[in-house]
Amino acid sequence: MPGLMLLDTPSLYFRAFHGVPESVTAPDGMPVNAVRGLIDMIASLVRDHSPDRLAACMDADWRPAFRVAALPSYKAHRVAEGGREQVPDTLSPQLPVIDRVLDAVGVARIGVPGYEADDVIGTCAAGSSGPVDIVTGDRDLFQLVDDSRPIRVLYTVKGIRNIQIVDEAAITDRYGIPGRAYADFAVLRGDPSDGLPGVPGVGDKTAATLISAFGSLEGLLAALDGERAEEIPAAARRRLAAARDYLAVAPTVVRVARDAPVPRADLTLPAAPRDPAALAELAARYGLDGPVRRLREALQAR
Image 1: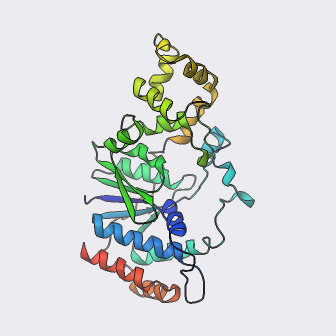
Image 2: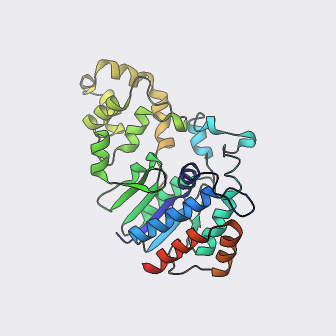
């Protein structure tokens, strides 16, 4: 499906880091497992899906102030010294190399101060007039799936090669909710990995039942306050009422921004590297000849 491909780059390089052994090193002994894994993933995506445009979306702010103000627990367990995100010691030195490789290839890198990569993706997807593929290992971005656009997620299920295509039917099949209701479902059930508590006592099954019955979180809360309150099981009614404060702020945290001030950028995917000399130097210095060759071949073959 040629069109726009948006990479959730932090999700992908973390996935590559954990999916490729640290024994994969540059000639000087520096681990380059995340770099190699990410380049090979991009080569596979370009070869298999032939996007016309591609953007590597970045976290300019991995824990935005507006989300923390709404819910202080948001990603709090992942804060390292100085307020930085906890990143493995052997991954941190690889991140500038990833940036330099992407720049030499000619892949646009986009980040917006005060926003996460998810928000850049949401905004770019909202502004696109054609098909969009979002590549991520993060289920949060399922909320952007929209068959009518079409916008779908290429979900990295395991490692860096196993890709599952997620459309509205896949969401309904997996979670038992309407295909565009993932954000409301996530608010109710929570996500410990992001410090999102959810409504105590409401798990996947109850959240899916409630969202399916009332269509949305807004519809559920309207029912709770109105004539349909008796349609909500008594236990769930009590739990929702007790979680009012959380439910008032959680959507701000969970919902991806679709109006971030994303700068204009040329997202055209080149047929050949933008700076072949710089790319060759990086390949030699970091032992990336194989992945770089595969990416060049994928670009040329489109």
